Image (cartoon, rainbow, N blue to C red; front, side, top):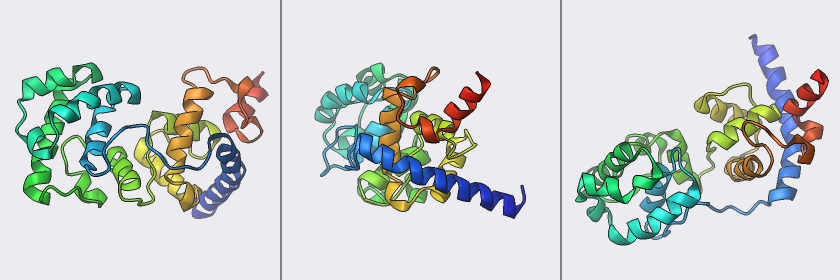
Length: 227
């Protein structure tokens, strides 16, 4: 794709976003919050909760961490945990073998290489076991207040259907959205995308008949043209 055509596409998506974002704001609000419960004095808890949230609901993670963070109240406790016991503790979140290794490994690395302090830069965060860009951006946005875009399954699906990206790879979607969205909606798009994805824009069958975004949704417009 030539630079001229690429810029035209970005401009068109920005214009589409300018129509979509006020409607999302009106429907879901603009308050920043997390669906995962954690102690803000122990910011590493959000990191660990996000690791557990892979292929698992936030509600389930919150049920597990309610007891987990009591049993292991410090990074030192996580670092010294028995792997098999940790697997049993987090079993209901799924993929518990890898997740248990990631929790213990991340705790040890935070203590050994970062002095027990959660880093804010994405390069350091993604060095931690089990931490990719999505998890790192959750921490950056919700702990440090750094404008970051978190692309989970809802955001990937919703932004593609709306026509804000043509990509399905989460990293490519993330960088597309940096180009298209104003900075004040970088964190919000995750919260609003989750809300929209859960309420209306479901996979595999979105409830387009109940949607407030049909006037500016590419998926709806293309689907309507075919029928």
